[in-house]
Image (cartoon, rainbow, N blue to C red; front, side, top):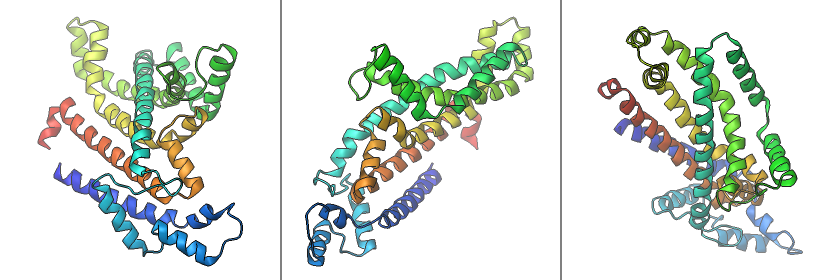
Length: 303
């Protein structure tokens, strides 16, 4: 665990340093703030940079950011002066809830379908599930999101088209991401189950007269759970930073939308904070996955 923590610290350091350097290549925030103000002189731009702290050396700005990271103080947004920690606190729960709901939808769909495809290997059910998963992989998430809005919001008027307001507003964004994830997860579950079902202990379990559902879900699924936990865990981490398009389509007030707006405004503190927090979340998910290994397979605790 100590080794994992040290690796995580190094990863976060590299990510924050790279991002801090890269975003400063996108342009001068002082010019963005000065747009629409009419004629402006170099002295005016210098005063703006001094007020924003951009006149300091890069490493001084970076270490100030790292110092604030330990107390969850990311400074203030260049656009409006709102504390960045306040913006993160409002956006992060929205993204986490949407990512979690999307992953749950995918797991609920993909595990039964993957097991069914493995059991019916080579039969029509297997072929149908594999074709459906291939079709699902072909859907761009923004196109699927727009189609769901057209059907369930505009035509049927069953669900709200955008925003986060109650359980109904989660359905379409979570289903959109869930379907895209399911297309990959079904194939993963199928592959893992095919290898497990050929094991000798599965034949012994069936010879004992255990029901097929107990053989599949209690014995086979548990023993192929490690690669599934790994992939689902990493998938959740990727979801935290990878649903920006879906958030934009559904006007979801999450981290993706916050980062997208920060890029357009060259709002360094906000973008730097968003990427840092998402990096910490992804590293944390990876650590949880490692711990889950030991819970599923006790042999890993001794390695």
